[in-house]
Length: 188
Ligand code: SF4
Ligand code: SF4
Image 1 (cartoon, rainbow, N blue to C red):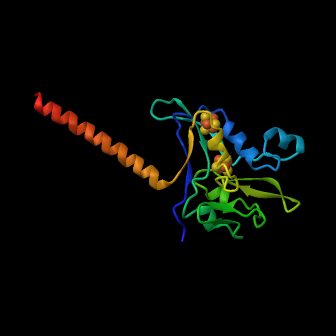
Image 2: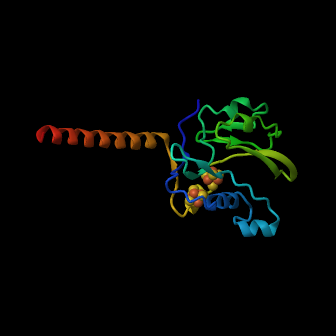
Image 3: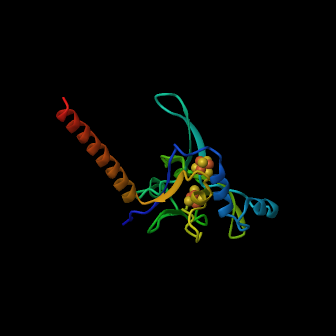
């Protein structure tokens, strides 16, 4: 039974579209641990997130934001994978690249476009395999993208916290509305 795990939340109001998070993500998943070190060692760079620009409605302004896996609890990529390469752990939705046959089914069903297939080295052999956000679970300092973002546009959050925050915001709005109504009623 999947449990409620964390995910990376982006605040588009803070995102500059600078791509620092992509570089940090790619570096965090290399042996060298840095972009320059990886390039010098001939390692491939594979960011698991993707910074995009979209047109905002209704004003048509441009919104920049980092997109990555939402760590779905009932993940379509897990349901569709014919080899069991994508699976749900206690906290996130993972890919075992040793089992991946690069069929792209996970890529096609992901509602967020958060999976891509690329060439990599698995157990000393070059192959194509799926890549997705793993929340940097093997990184003691936590998600590299969150740490690197210069504007703190990204955070590691639990769905419950996000709901509580929205509930608090709605409660404040309600109290503000009530207060103005009472003010109007006492000063007609
Ligand atoms: S590092 Fe932060 S500000 Fe820059 S693109 Fe990523 S989320 Fe946006
Ligand atoms: S949490 Fe880690 S794996 Fe996921 S997008 Fe951020 S840096 Fe990449």
